[in-house]
Length: 391
Ligand SMILES: Cc1cc2nc3c(=O)[nH]c(=O)nc-3n(C[C@H](O)[C@H](O)[C@H](O)COP(=O)(O)OP(=O)(O)OC[C@H]3O[C@@H](n4cnc5c(N)ncnc54)[C@H](O)[C@@H]3O)c2cc1C
Image (cartoon, rainbow, N blue to C red; front, side, top):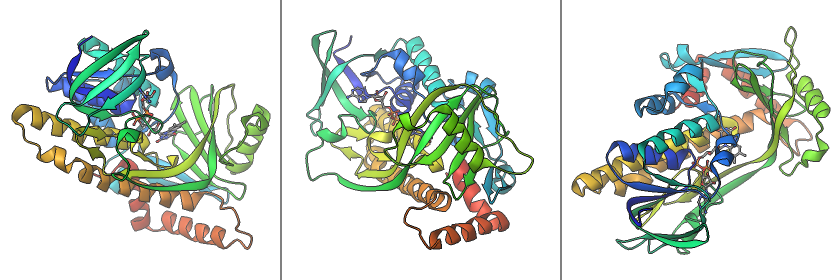
């Protein structure tokens, strides 16, 4: 492998892979280091809602052929409460915009295939990645692979290694400010081999807790239930999951289709932002530097939006040493990040059953808020604009 590159990218999630491809399109050399194997990351089930801007970018980059063929374009979502559904029509409220349902693992598969076709390096199963001298003009990435020690000299390092990565932690103490909210609940998510029960997503508010009906394809349904943040999965045999889903989604004339559950997991809901998103020649992007609760479906979209700005900045720097966009990187991204945090918080507090609400005060506020959203065009437009993505 090259022992020198222009941009060393840590992590082959959506952020690292999109960045690598955008740089390739500008003729910029990069090496991507990923500590998992290819099969693992191609099967990792996570997000599935692409904002209009994310889908458009993947198409512009030339990696959207399968997305265009297999992605499900949606022009609305349903808000369901008191057993009644109310549709929020995105296209009508946002001048024709929509979202595309296409699993994150499919995006990752397409990006890996595109990367390998370019012949640029993408190294799987690297161990012990250590960013060094990131505040100098010649940062390095040291790592082990197949038992051998390597050193990769870089002009820049992109930390796209997710929340549990190593790049954020290599910034010296006192430079980053951390802000965090951990919600007192999580989501139990399942993937079931069954045709979706509705053409669009259903966000369901219920006294037993929040539920979400989503999908990954015409044959795969993704369903979520609000649960405890540390809910033991062994307490949730399949029959209990289906019973609970039926109870929360119950609505006259509508029924939930059941099928074999092929994936099950609990995700805690949290908001987290570290800022600034840069230190010296280390640029942090995606989950490495911010986490949003999944209620707003923004995590993957924010990761892609970050690296779009980063690729622009790096391209300007390599073409004529113009560092204006790199200097503005953190500020430009954080505006979008905090907006997404706000929207995800807004959706989360409107839809989830709040613990310690003995007198039902919170529940009454939620009902008032939901009624407002479904009866006021202005309020529904605010939800629609945020959901399809701002900017
Ligand atoms: C369990 C789960 C469920 C989710 N569900 C949803 C959802 O339903 N809807 C939604 O909108 N969002 C969801 N998200 C959020 C969304 O998936 C993320 O926002 C998105 O993956 C961010 O992309 P990323 O590239 O920044 O990070 P990641 O996808 O986390 O990619 C980081 C990559 O870096 C690699 N890596 C980590 N450490 C190292 C290291 N030391 N060296 C080398 N490589 C390393 C990892 O293996 C990984 O491949 C979910 C996240 C999780 C964790």
